[in-house]
Image 1 (cartoon, rainbow, N blue to C red):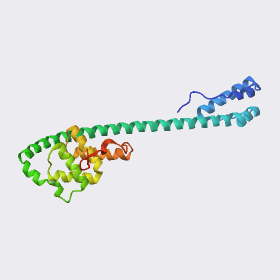
Image 2 (cartoon, helix red, strand yellow; image 1 turned 180 degrees about the vertical axis):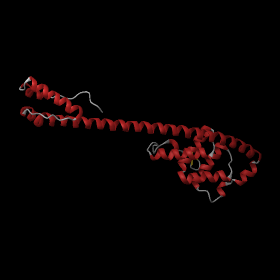
Image 3 (cartoon, rainbow, N blue to C red; image 1 turned 45 degrees about the vertical axis):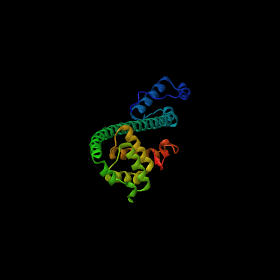
Image 4 (cartoon, helix red, strand yellow; image 1 turned 90 degrees about the vertical axis):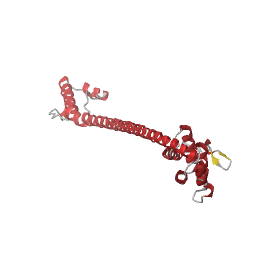
Length: 227
């Protein structure tokens, strides 16, 4: 960074008062040249050479060092701030893209679920027989609770989707998946992808301390089902 000025210490005034006008002029010109491009004067005058080497030059160097240090800190802070702004912009763009993708997936899954529900209504007896989940040992107790919660919200589900829910409970925990099912109910988005993403976000927020231990997401009723 080019400087358009340099510091003249008031403590030098007493020394300048002892010099002639010609000596003062020569010393001032030497200070300007040194500050501008580092050119050191070749004084033949012993008084000026002594003043320059013993006082003027060392203090000008110290002032320059302090200036360079300050500029360096400001530059570093500016770069750090710019990097934070860049990262925040990228994060917001990624969130927006992910949200758009999630919305598209939800719309497709919602249409698929509506078609599936129509088939369930036509084959209700067969599906109920297929999904007597309490008799299936490969579902965990917590998985059964979440599956029952899902069916209370969206109706009878297939064994395949029940297994997917049970796997989500294994991966993220009962509370996270139950919360995701409730959110799916609110958003009318019963798809597994939506529930998986919501459960994952719940776990991340909990790890970050953004979900309090006493949160209302862990209420129970009946057989211990999270609601």
